[in-house]
Image 1: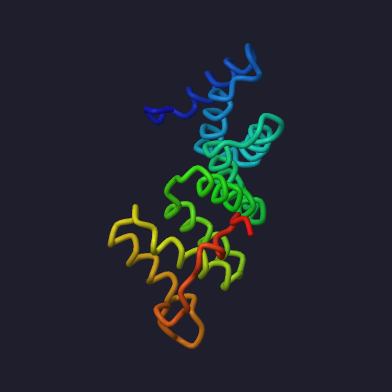
Image 2 (image 1 turned 120 degrees about the vertical axis):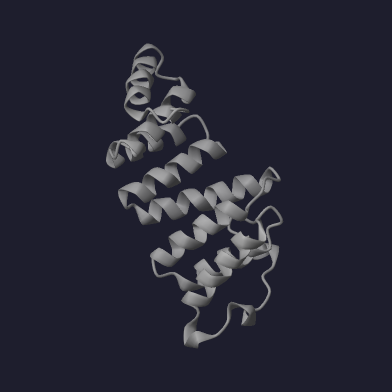
Length: 166
């Protein structure tokens, strides 16, 4: 998989799972391989299995969001990204990239307000580069109403973050 040989990675991960069906690393590789081999419905089924039963970790939730995106399951993608946001926030992990994906997923579903909130939070994430922030601002400006600038939006608070406990 690290060399981009997805068909081989798919075969080897299936073999590993045949010997030990609880091997999370093999299942994660299987999901990635299925996505890359354009077998998106299978990838989504495997990603669901990965996140059920044994708890949810960040990598598995990211793979679920990725598989859901690839197979066109927009609602499931958003749900996975919201859970991933909550976990990353709880663990003190960087949120900028996750929030950017969440903003894009919400925008794709026509959920402009939720998209803008996620993008606003992403824009202030310290790990993003100036170029990444500018790209997010362009996306925000594109989905604003009446051609207003996204800089006219009120500041967001941490409570606006998906998964924030109130």
